Image (cartoon, rainbow, N blue to C red):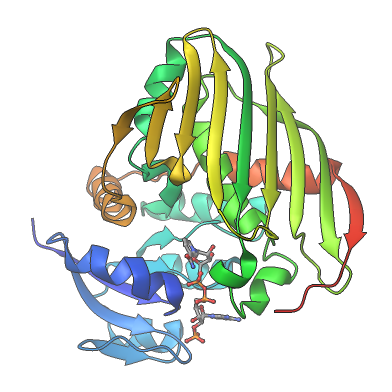
Length: 308
Ligand code: NAP
């Protein structure tokens, strides 16, 4: 099969850290162009807008959209309308309805839309899913606690409406939880903490349940200094499961049973080419729906102002 002519839009941190190396290592793609207001990628054609890029290079077949979520919908409509397959960085958009609209647009045009959730491709996630499928879960605790100053320095969009605040990393945990649990869950209560000078939460506590009364709670906090934690602990009748390091390592009763080098973005790009060749889309909105429900049901507390 000839490689897919790919373009990337919104050249920033995640493109440089992950997309460019993953695409360079995959013969199914030929990276032909980038569009970004300021960012540039060496060795390919660069444009300052997606409109200029799409009209100059009709041979582009697929587009990865990596700008902040509030600005992704407009670019996605342009790409789909121009007949391109679309890869959406996570979260796939700023609202549920806009992403549902994109899925309908893609379906109507016979194009593939990929709402990517990179954390689902962390090395031990599938092993955790298999472990939980064969056991009875008594409770699950999720702790996603990191230092926003270390991981998101100067990212103003993340604090603005639609930027999700602490749910920007928290939604990664939810993308794993919704993959490894055997049954769908729903939010039962939430507390969101908003810095007095920001429009997005710096911390959130959420409880969930399912049809069988599962005891599930998640703590997301951006004020963590020292050890960072991206852990999911489940107490089950087959022992205590710890999925740690953001899904990279699985331990049962303290013994490591699964650990591999991280391959999230190479796997995302393999999945994207697979759905393009199969003529399918992959748009699971469950993680974004839980965030929306937490905003809808959650109590709010104002906390100290946050300054970068
Ligand atoms: P970023 O570096 O702050 O932003 C990416 C690029 O988007 C910017 O360099 C900017 O390029 C463009 N952009 C910013 N504001 C824009 C606007 N108003 N309109 C159009 N384009 C705009 O962010 P990032 O860390 O790469 O994150 C981007 C997305 O990837 C987010 O959804 C995030 O959740 C996801 N992600 C990030 C990470 C991570 O570790 N950072 C990990 C996984 C997923 P120009 O100024 O050149 O247009």
